Image 1 (cartoon, one colour):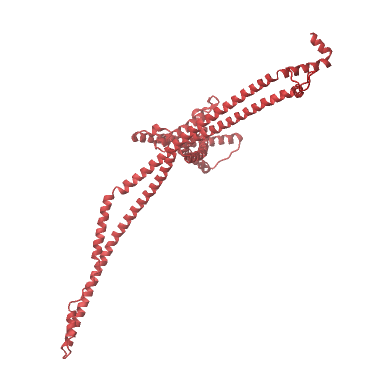
Image 2 (cartoon, one colour; image 1 turned 135 degrees about the horizontal axis):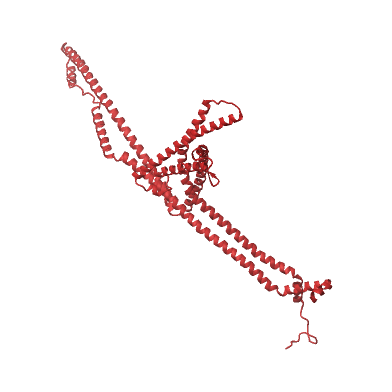
Amino acid sequence: MSLYSMLESNPLTTYPVMIILVLVLLYLARHQAHRMIRSFTLIGAQALRLAARSMLLAENKLRQRNREVLLAAGAGEIEKELEREFQRVDAVVKRDLQTYPAFHRSMSDLITRIDDDYRQSTDVPPSPPAWIAAIEAVAKVPNSDGGVVEILGEINKTLDRHHKSTMDEYRKSSQQRHGLLNKMMPVWRKLSETLEHVGKTINGLHERSELITVKMDEYEKIRNGADEAERRLSSSSLTQFFISGLVMLIAIGGAIINFNLIALPMSEMVGGGSYIGSFKISDVAALVIILVEISMGLFLMESLRITHLFPVIGQLDDKMRRKMIWISFALLFTLAGVESALAFMRDQLATDLQALRQSLSGVEVVGSQVSSLIPMAGQMILGFVLPFALTFVAIPLESFVFSSRTVIGLSLGFLLRTIAFLLRLLGNILNHLGKALIALYDLVIFPAIWIEEKVKKTPAKQQPGSIPGEVHS
């Protein structure tokens, strides 16, 4: 109380004294305060750095896991494509090349027939007559009388007759040869068509073999974990994710239209005044019908082995799988018929509501029956077609599910790297903040620090009576 009264009585002299005392105390506690500030900031900075390092380690493990999943998925896709290509090659071989022995025998028979007909159609020139030598001998006889001339005349007549008969025989043989050549033309065409078919088959197999070679190279790169394969698979997954997401949005729009198409008539079937929580029972019933249709379409696609979201369905035997196909299709067809009937009912309800409004307003308007039949038919067709259209949503859904694993993994990795960067940034900020606090602490007590530096720089005074240069013990 006496100190307080003294401060109250002499504020101009006591407050500076108190400030000097505080500065002295702060100066005396300077090193301990520095260590305390540095310790707290180092603890925070090290904790943030450890957290950032943990995030980076988690991101590294996640990246390795994403790489394994991506390569495994890529290898699975390549294996499916190779399996389909081998099945196609097997089908081509069974269809076209398994009859190769019969084909070879048929080719040999055709070639033999062509060779025989060709030999028979060979043009053999007629041999010169044997009596030419006789003519030459008679011509050498001296023309002493007219007997030689008569003989030569008879020989000329005989030669003409023989030439005519020889030409007739040659024409007949030429006609026979031409007939054989005409018979060879269908055989040639058949042989050419057969060879062309075989050539197409061989070319198709060659193209399949080249495609299989390319797929095998990709498969080897994936199995070896090449970075090129990983980048290509990542790009493909991102593309599939956005494309399938766009198709899913279109399918959601179709589901919304389907919902609005059957929501009004469902209120007449299940009651429009009943609620489940804050939702109408009619809306819930319409939504359930649409979800059941999508489920049946998904089961149908799984039974047809177009999609592979449920491996249990794909592993069923063919008999059970065919039964499931027919059951799913029958239920889907039934639900499509129900929606078509609900669409017809919706048009009737809309017509009744319009007539009620007109009667209440006192306006008598008669609508055209033809104009009302057109939207009714359109609604019925739309109600029947939309369930089957929503069936194909299973294909983009499968692509979206499988590609979302890669996209989610990449997003989580980016998020972890961002968090690690922010933690390291906060750690560095906290470290420099400690240095700033130490500098601020020294700034507060800078008079004492300035005096300390001046004292340290002042040289020690010599003792009185001492001789310069004398060494004291």
